[in-house]
Image 1 (cartoon, one colour):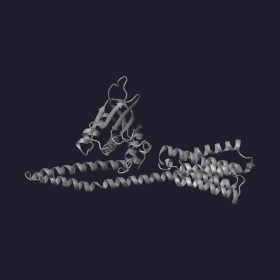
Image 2 (tube, one colour):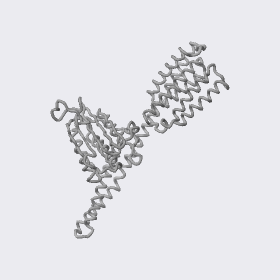
Image 3 (tube, helix red, strand yellow):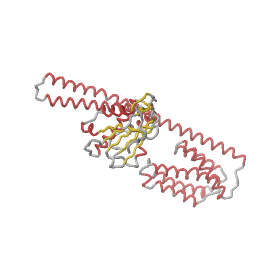
Image 4 (cartoon, rainbow, N blue to C red):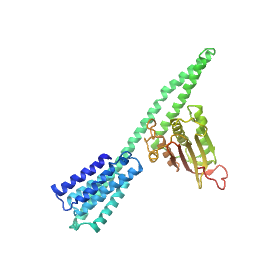
Length: 409
């Protein structure tokens, strides 16, 4: 952002001198150049450049880019009677704008920017010779060609990024799968220790070795669960749609019971509250993985907060909202999430925890929700925990629904 802002400042100064002194053009406005170049200072401010992924930064960036490119270039193009220099500049601008934004935003931004520039020129522009009518078609074809090429390049870049993401996820899945071999060997060692202790019941270290063997097996189970998570997350882009009926209450109960907690105090801190059960259409395995991801994140947040894992520090709730929607709510009393990070946490490879995590778990959760026609939302404050709300369309209720009932706040 800092270098982009500097390029705005230096670029306008340079081209203002070129088009007014070295290679004079019919129209050049030093005051306008200075005003537009000063917009680059905004991009150099700390509140913009230090958090480029924040929503306010994206809004500021898109607005400034729109003013700097379609609006300003459109104005200069019209004020210079659409001469050769500004036709070439407009062509370059179109390509740059498409590369700097999404193709949908680029198309709407170009149309809106040109319309605004035309309106400003019509009401406040200088009196200049009009472009000959014979040249309008030529300019239209050249600019349309630049726009089509810009759109194709934008879509190609998006497909390339998607392929790179797919290859990366596949590599992660392969690496996770390969870890099973040493884990199998570790499990065999644990079995061998337990068998040996059964043969020597009076051995003075039998109890300690048996305890070590149990801890080894618990570690292997935990690691295998993590590997299953990584392999499932690696299928982020290839999630099939399923329409099997799934009981929300059964899903929550079974997933929370089967989760490989590292200690009993972690298991004891989890409380499940079934206010109402409901059936939704989806894939039970994918949703079990989704809940496991949320439970894992919540336990990490509790550990980071030095929690005592008191009962209820992690709550799982199933309830019905107003309308044909069911909720599964996961609430923890952990460290919470910075408000500036909340809009980003469902993006692939974005992790709010800089010390651990690959940033795929929540992206997988969102993909699962979209495949089932539902949504997932988060609310959180730093130091006050986090609340993830899964909202699903209800296929039918397991029993007669109360006349008035809503999810707990």
